[in-house]
Length: 405
Ligand code: SF4
Ligand code: SF4
Image 1: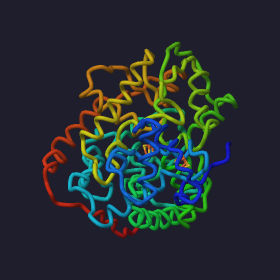
Image 2: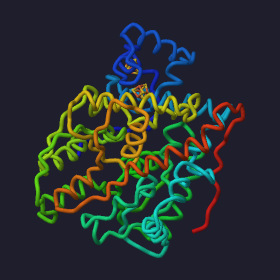
Image 3: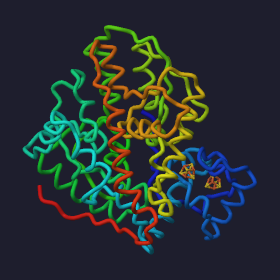
Image 4: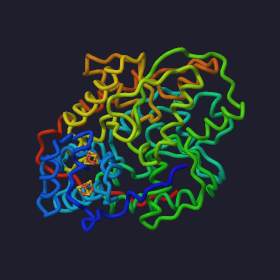
C-alpha cells in the first residue's frame, strides 16, 4: 500500500509558494491559473473567498496536487469550522444531521421493508464480538446489499447511533466529531472488537487516519471490504461462474484518492476479473468529482438541495460522456446519491451498480437491485422534510448526545 499522507495536518502557509496549482487543478472550481493565484493570495492574506467557501466539496484533490505538501483542503475545513462556530448551519442542514431525530437516513430506515428492518435490528446487538462487519450509515439504509453469499460468515454490527462522524469532519464540525469519537470508543470497547471489515472508504479513513490523528485510539484492525474481497478472489474462495462482458465507469469515493493508486486499482482489478471493462471519466481517480452529496457540505450551502443536485448532475454528466454501459460504485452512499440524481437528471439513465452487486452477478446470484426504490424514498423524504425549511432564517446547531450501550 502506498504511504498514506497525513491529510489531517493543518494547512502549512509557511511552505505555500502561492503557485495556485491547488485551485487551478481543483476539479470542482477549475480556476484559470491567474484566478487561482489571485484567490490563493487572498486566502493566504486572511480574506475569505466566497466562491471557495461556498463551492468547495472538501474532496481533497488539492492536497494531492500541492507540490509543497501544504494540505490546502485543511485550510478550508478550518475556515468552515470558524464559520460554523460563529453562526451555526442554515436550518435546512438539520435534515442531513445524522444526530437529529428525524433525518434523511431515519426517514428511509423507518420505511424499510420488513425483512430489511429485521436485519438492521439484529445488527444492533451489543454482545461481545471480536470480528465484525461494520455497515456504516450508508449500508444501514441499503441492508439488501448484504444479502449475498460473498459476505457469508461475517457478523454485522452497527446502527445509525454509531455513525463514524465523517460528515462532521468534512464540514469542519470538529468538536461534534470528537463527541462522536467518544461514543464510538465506548461502543467498540463494549463489543471487544479486534478486527473490523468495513464497506465504506470514508469510514476506513475515519478509523485509520482522521480519528487517530486527533488522538482517538481504536484498538482493532480495520480492513476495507475491497482488498478483503480481492484477496478471497485471489485465493479461489470466490468462484466466478459468468463473465459479465460489459463496460462501466467508476464513481470514485472521495476518500479513494487518499489511499492512493494501489487502493483505487482494487475495484478495477475486481471488475476486470469478472469481465467488466472500465472506461475512465475525464476527471477520474485523484481528480474525480464527488457523487454530489459533498456539494452541500459547505457551511454556506448547508446541504442546499440545489448545490447537491448541481454536483450530482456534473458527476452523472461525466459518467454519460464515457459511453459505458453502467456506473460502478464501491460506496453505498454514491449508489444512492447518483440514483436520486437520476430522478431529476434526464440525460443519464445508466444503471448504477454497487460492486458487490456486479460480483454477485458474476458468481451466479441475482442481486435485489432496490436502489431505485430506495432513491424514491430518499427523494420523498427531502421533499417532505427539508424543502419546507429552505426559506427559514433560523440556524441549526448539532447536538451529539451521550448514549449508553
Ligand atoms: S498548490 Fe500548494 S504551494 Fe501552490 S498555492 Fe496551493 S497550497 Fe500553495
Ligand atoms: S478540497 Fe477539492 S473542492 Fe475543495 S478546493 Fe480542494 S480540490 Fe477543490
